[in-house]
Structure formats: C-alpha cells, structure tokens
Image (tube, rainbow, N blue to C red):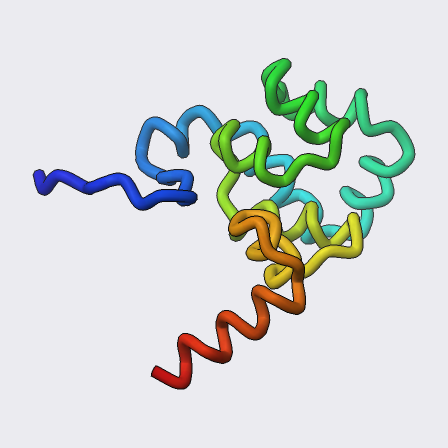
Length: 115
C-alpha cells in the first residue's frame, strides 16, 4: 500500500473516515428524496437520531458547520445534499474549506484552469 502524504487544508477521506462518517453520509444521501428533506427540516434532532449520528456529527449539523462535518467523516459528495438544504453549492463549500469567499474561490478555480 502506498503512503499518502498530508495535503495542507485537506481532510483526508479514507477508509477509517468513511466508517466514521457512515451515519452522517447515509443521512445526507436521504436528502435525495424530497420526503427526507422535509422530515429533516420538520425535526432535525429526531432525523439525526434516526440515522445514529455521533455527538460530534449532531453538533456539526446543528451548527451548520460543513468543515466540522468533513472532520466528522462526511464525504463532500454526500454533504453537497445537506449544503443544498442550506442554500450552499460546492463552490461555497470550497471557499469555506480554503478560507476564501465564494467569489475568490471561483476566481481561483478559473485561474487554475488557465495554467
């Protein structure tokens, strides 16, 4: 198995993180369904409990802290469903991850494409 070096500012999503984040990611996957989104918005605490989120994950959800959700094992692909409920898109989350505004992050992406 190859050794993966740490990338500054990146939260590594590997096997242990996938296991840790399974309940959170399963809940976020349920947001593909309108009934799931509606049930979550009606009673967030019960919905989180239904999926067995850890205390850390529940707190991150309650705080709307996408970075803490990533640190709690969330996969950006599933968290995008949750971010959508919050009115955020992937570029918004990218900005949060990098400490940039959304517009700064979008400009950064364009700049990277020009190289």
